[in-house]
Image 1 (cartoon, rainbow, N blue to C red):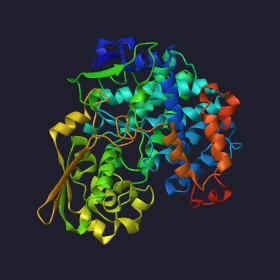
Image 2 (image 1 turned 60 degrees about the vertical axis):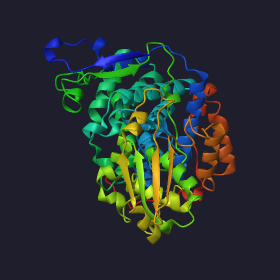
Image 3 (image 1 turned 30 degrees about the horizontal axis):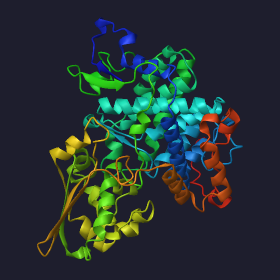
Image 4 (image 1 turned 90 degrees about the vertical axis):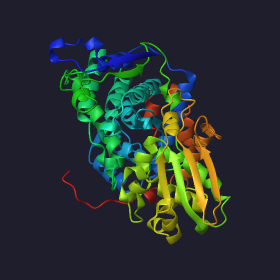
Length: 501
């Protein structure tokens, strides 16, 4: 690995493209590195994971909306849509839109946290859709996905978007463009221009994750993926991009990020070095914001120690800066304490999440979020007793440069009305690579079977799982059928017919 130093340069400096971050990303996207066996195995795990959560969300409203928009764009030799028979094909950018929304809706797939947040599995739908439309094989596909993960993970390590209230999909546009460059074996110059266009068009504010969080949270990554595809399409036709997009005088660093006096350090592999950043990422056992995963596990264990929840006086959660200010009371969002808040808001409220997990001793991707569950009197009372606090020790653990030492949990102290207290802490979720029960292939398959049970047939589940686990050797025709069809009774629900298309 190497550390790339980037900063703003005046236009008069005429910074060479070979010295620009976008070019250096394009170089690794067009290099000749070969995937390692561990990385290949993890790609398969994440494709299974994405399919699980996409099928589980098949008839949720945002997913229906996205799918119906995509269904209006059929293409004879296009890409497939999750849940729809594979004989039907659609424009790849619209398939990416529908599938990306389905993957993101439940907030239940993989994550990587460092200087910023990310869900690197968001790279898979757009890269997969283009692979289908362009008749790529399994080996091409996995190389493209590996590049997408490599770029996004390393951008997240080096550049914090959140401190400037920019949504984390600004790292996704460039990673998708780079991944597509690898998939399609494009020249470095074309990838370079595509990365710059993709970044330029995918910058949006973080209001999508603040206050009353709407369904746009599910659409945002698929929008970035769609824009990434379109950027590559234009640049393959010879079009250029705003340049230098990171280092220019009026660039992203200059006026969106920290400005002209700040230098960023971005880790990136050397040319032809094995890409394995995917191995630093982790999936979710629970359908909730990642920083709640360890605390859900802690709440489940504490449930066994507290016989009467009503005897609790208050609960203090000591945790990292990000957890306190994004999903904790430090956000100062009254919506995070509101029993009538949207599901999207509730899954970004650690106060709500911890209260339900503590009371139930479990967590469910549907039942834990129903309006009836959120408004239960005992839950509301417990919920209002919870406060979070930033502790420097937990913030340092969160940002530890060694992935094996990173922690995303916290210390919880429960004060009882009788004056006694219970204090416990958990650094990482049980399913984390460093946790008590790290997710293996069997866990991904178990999650897949749990989330798709009753929605797809046993025969369809077996066919998909056998096919995807042979990804490296799949021919282009096999990639065309690497999709899942839901049972016909689940494919009847439609959104209101209000459309201009």
